[in-house]
Image (tube, rainbow, N blue to C red; front, top):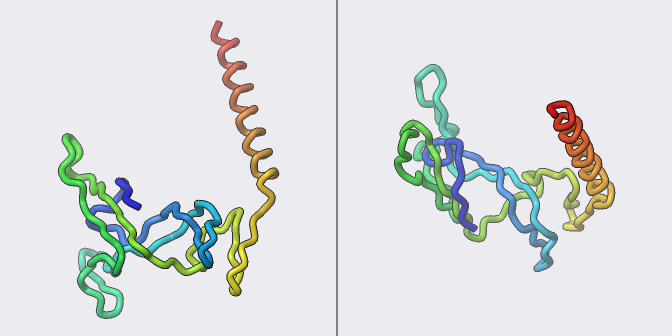
Length: 139
């Protein structure tokens, strides 16, 4: 997986939210969101670098390739970057579990997708109704 992303990923980000396939015992359980640590952590506190334990390099973790995508015309101060994950194992505790959860013994539990779909349709119907109301008001 290779992604071109924004928001400090190029040089500063230590974590990223990634949508990736949930593979358990060779079974594909669909694409799920995860919080993934991509670098050893260091941060600035009152203009002084503070490092967590002895990890002072801020280098990418094993299996993670991350970097800056280069200068951007008009946005030189923006730290956009790219991210590649190669066989990175993510703990189940780092999964952002809204509709799918993984138990300690590796069983996948999925929420009723019909309920999620029904909620999405209700929101979309409300957006269309509001747009039509505003369109009729402006005529």
